[in-house]
Length: 82
Image (cartoon, rainbow, N blue to C red; front, side):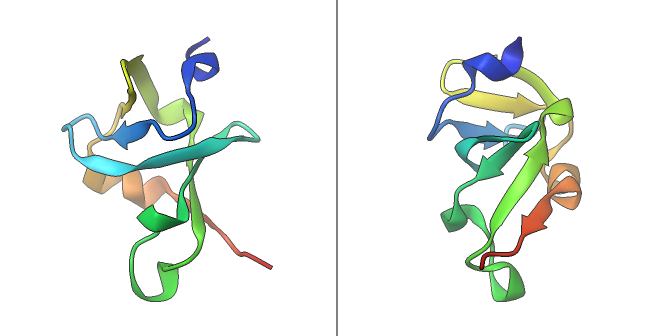
């Protein structure tokens, strides 16, 4: 299974090689990205998640997605912090 090879602090990149985020951990079938990759404005300071179904492969210290970065961020889910 690909997800068993995903570790904390791995870089998540789109199929185009562009940085999407950094792995915080796996949680509920999704990659939880670190807050530092949360973007700006209303997205700042929230964790974002990407479904493991978007993973194409794990290569070295990178998780490559099957979608380009601009498309992958549209599939991100935001978690509200309490």
